Image (cartoon, one colour):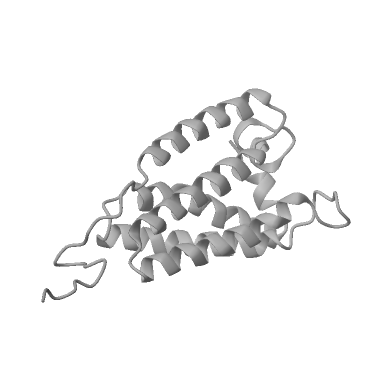
Length: 176
């Protein structure tokens, strides 16, 4: 493994790569950690920041040009921004199921699916991890991402809790 394909690239690609790697590794900590504890919140703040940096820097990378200087991947930063906004809005509204599901799905789609494309042969991350021209590396990455996606998907919150004394999710109407 050599990081030279990353360190030898431009500053924007380096920032994008390191932010994406931070998001990739910190995301499962935030998703799988017990809700509302300090580590979940810290990991969540770090993950949102890393995702935002990754999305913004992606807008300035034009190596795959399919539609003028753009490629379909340039739509992803807008989706990431929308999903982050939706998840933050949900947690502020104390809609914890919506928050948890949005963050989990954002992780799976952005880190899993989009990240998997970085492991295609002749791409930088394939060169870093597997030497640069390895379909076997792509297949191994697909297997790992598939398993991680399955674990995270099953960990999603399923039912909106009623609330508790420490963190009420809705206001209780006084009885008459």
